[in-house]
Image (cartoon, rainbow, N blue to C red; front, side):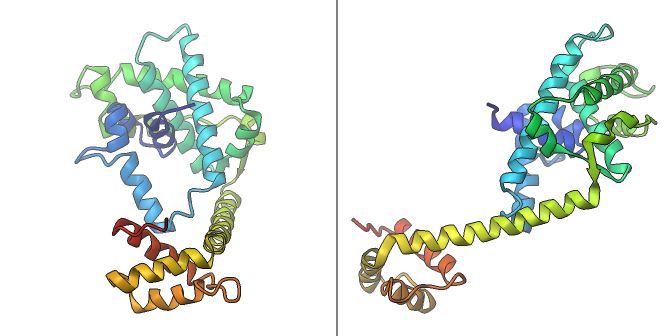
Length: 269
C-alpha cells in the first residue's frame, strides 16, 4: 500500500525531478509556484491523452517504481558510507539511473520488475554504487552554494551537478532493459486498448440502465429543459433500447448529459 504523496515521490524521481521530491512530500505532490509538482504533471498528461495514458500498464509501472524506491531505501541504510539524508539520496539516485538509461536509448523493463515484485540483484548493486557517488555530491556542494545539504538538494543546480556526473552504465543491467522505442510503442498500444475498453464499458452501462431509466430522464427534461437538442436526440434512441442502440460515438454525450442532469436534481428513483 502507498499514499498519494508516496506515488508522487516514485513518479517524480523517475521523471528526473529529484529537486522537486526534495521539497518534501506535500510540495512534491501539490507543487509550488516555482516548481509544478505531481498534480500538475498528471493533469497535463491526462488532458493530452484524454485519460488514456492511465491504464493497467501505467499502474504496473508505477508499482514497479515504488519497488525501486522502497528497496533502495532499505539498501542505503545498510551501507558503511551512509550518514544521513536518505530521502535525498534515494530520489537523486533513481533520477540518475533513469537519466543514464534514457541517454543510452534504452528503457527500464518496469513490467518485468512488476512481475518479479522485487529489485533484481544487478539493479540493486548498480543503484548502491550510484548512491555512493550521489551521497558524495550531496555532501560536497560547490563553493558559493549553501552548506546545508537539505537546502542544496532542493535546488535545480544540485540536479544539474549530479546529472552532469559521468557514470558508466553496467552491462549487467542489459537483461532488465528494453529498447526505448519498443517501450513507447507498448505504451501507445496500452492507450488504444484502454480506449476500446472504455468504449465497451460505456456502451454496457447505457444498455444495462435500460429504456425505463432513460425514459425517466426524458420525462424529467420535458419539465426542466436542461438537455440540448443533440442530447435529446441521443436520449430518444436510448429510450428505444434494445430495439435501437446509441452508437459508440453517441454514448459519451448521453452519459455526460445524465451526469449533468443528476447534478441538476434528476433522480431516477
